[in-house]
Length: 357
Ligand SMILES: C=C(O[C@@H]1C=C(C(=O)O)C=C[C@H]1O)C(=O)O
Image (tube, rainbow, N blue to C red; front, side, top):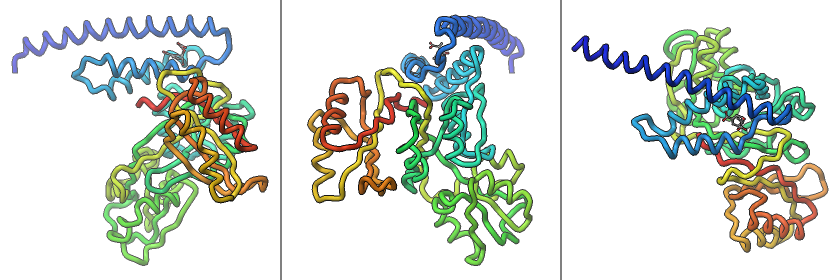
């Protein structure tokens, strides 16, 4: 090893770090000025943040991967915005849930994440403007829709202003080592379902599977009970100092959960957006087909179509539809007009940027 060569590179890194430091602070000063111009109004602009992240990925010369530089800039923006005022974000707690991870992935570490005891409470705290935004899971690639979030969106005045897609890795966690002496496994019902095959193969049939409110709650219970294990993610393992007895035990290797970010603002177009709506339809043959005609006729692509029995009693079914494009784009606007003519209930939940990181 050449000491001289090593020193040359380290000197170069020191000089670069000084420049980076100066430039990041210069950037923060501009963000603060922009905050002044906004004059106390809404400071967080999801469309602008998505554009910044896409630009960074598109212009990235390497060797760092695009995803990595986008994550770094995610944190820089988070700190710049916190200089104006840190955002407060409600999520289904306790600390260490995947929803908290999703909130941090979307807003960065400078945001103030607040654990709530239910998705309902998280919505309520944002509806009452006690907190700024709520992050809630909406669908999992193996388990399907998260009914409670969908039901809340039917009546909530909140608008969707972003989405987060998170790869979900589950681990078997325990205070002790090995699987000997495990009498029960705690996990959220979704996690039990997502690891069902693995549990059948790797634990005795008489081990009890107990579903609890969250993965983090499962980890907490396992940390207090030597004959218990939990299924949870990395964050919960760290939070409760548990050993990873087995890693990535999810049956489906591409297990991902999609989360929605909701707040009070309408988001302007970012250039690559989605629009989410709810429509109601009677339970009549052909009703859904004719209802959807304006979507196809205007060349709008649907990326999701999910039905739920209506609880309001006025309709038989409600449909959650995601489509490509922003509601202000002509073809999307025309599709929405056409839908409104065919049903008594259309609710636009929001137009928002497609997830970048
Ligand atoms: C600086 C702004 O405000 C916030 C901070 C941003 C940033 O650091 O780049 C981007 C969007 C906003 O969330 C802006 O609107 O441009």
